[in-house]
Image (cartoon, rainbow, N blue to C red; front, side):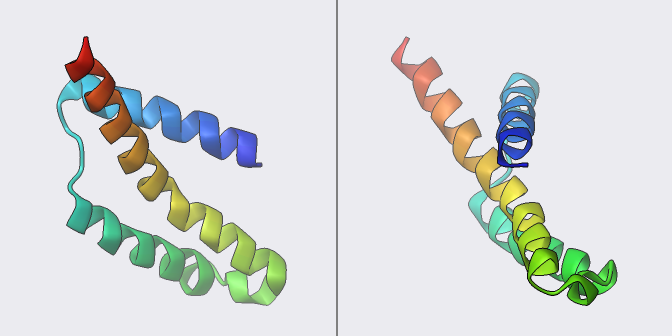
Length: 80
C-alpha cells in the first residue's frame, strides 16, 4: 500500500510540475485535514477501527507527499 502511495504521489508531483500547477503550502495543509476527515467520517472509516485510521492517514498524506515531491522536482530543475 505504501509503494502505491509513493508511486502515485511521485506521478502526481511530476504532472503538477509539468503543468506548472504546484499547490501552495497553505492549501496542502488544509487538504491534509479535509481528506482525513472525508475519509474517516465521510466514508465511515471509523467503522474499521485502526485500519480506518490508517487508511484515512494514507489518504491525508497524499497531497502532502505530492507537495513535497513537487518542491523537490522544482529544486532539481533549478540546479540544472
